[in-house]
View 1 (spheres, rainbow, N blue to C red):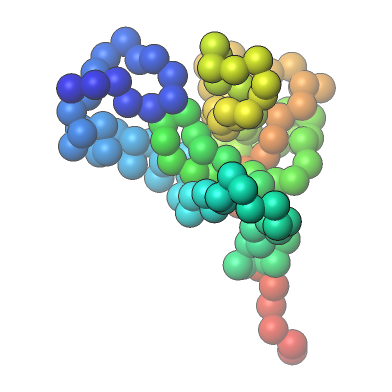
View 2 (view 1 turned 60 degrees about the horizontal axis):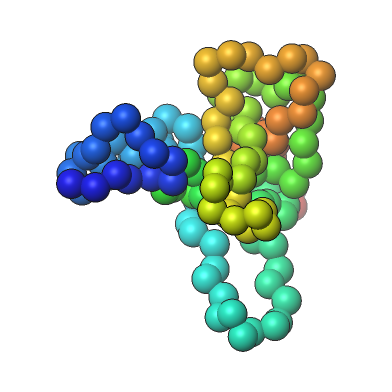
Length: 134
């Protein structure tokens, strides 16, 4: 057994138990996005931001703290404007690098943020599907 996820946990899980646990969390949190592209370090071509297939809006796709992926809105909003189930924060992984290269999305839970504190909403909160011509 080894530790899973992107932060050190107080427990270690076998591969099967970790995947079950992480998948249940992902479904509950709505973290069901496909992983972002893994570009070649020598490739300097521009990577366009992913597009939501439902509404056509640009989204930001980040890994979660439990190794699943979430589509986040492109803007931060005050916590008072975002329902609890959709609040996320982007945080840098501790101790890996002085350059903020490893950023993960963490669900805001436990202690509620102040109403004016910025949070990043999950894209599914802001997604309005495009409808065909009437």
